[in-house]
Length: 321
Image (tube, rainbow, N blue to C red; front, side, top):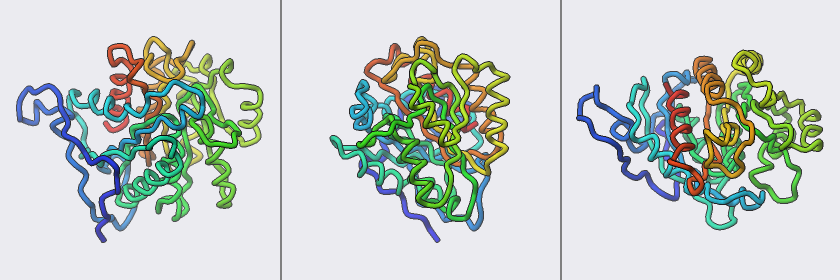
């Protein structure tokens, strides 16, 4: 059976970057990435180390606006592609681009639903989706895609690992970039499952007592930013990986110090050092359990020298390498 290409609002655009030659020894991302073709659905699950990666943009500011943050993340997919393009290509897998799903105005839920369908299609076709957000409302779009996939339908234990300064467990009447993980928990409960959710990098001053209480009630495992030594993060992530069959990894770039990632909605006063976050990414990649990946909260309008976009591009490269 051949899986159809995902339905997107903006088709893949040409990638650009530095040109050093046509040979494989000169190849950069912009020369390696190709438009996503329909793929034959494999008969069994594929290891994440071999699956082709498919980039899908999610251009959304709606959730950040609703959460009273700094809008601008809708421009992030283009900025992330621009940062990835010049990187030397050392990956042992194919990388394709499926284009973008965009949120028009405040039509967040409709955009999340469209992105979720596209992600489900990619997962069921044996691909590794790499979603470029967007505010962290991107996470609920990713959840819809993962929850609808054959991995979940077939009973795989999928855990959600969030690298983030915030729990994003707000209990609000209107969904936003601050609510996606509570939305996930409620959706999982309605489906008769329990959300396995862990966070690396929580900032105690930036999460209220109510949010900590919600995290406790939901059984959320978390590691505070001030406790994120390389060893502590490794032990924490290893314990999480041991409890799940597959991982949906979501990276909110505000987990990093503001000096490293200034171009986000809510820059971190403390943050987790980049080497620790990079090591966590390598640890997840080497586990062979990476099912789905997204990167969120890049705001190009506030990004000094494209610093945040370049860091995000390096992390994506690490996860796929």
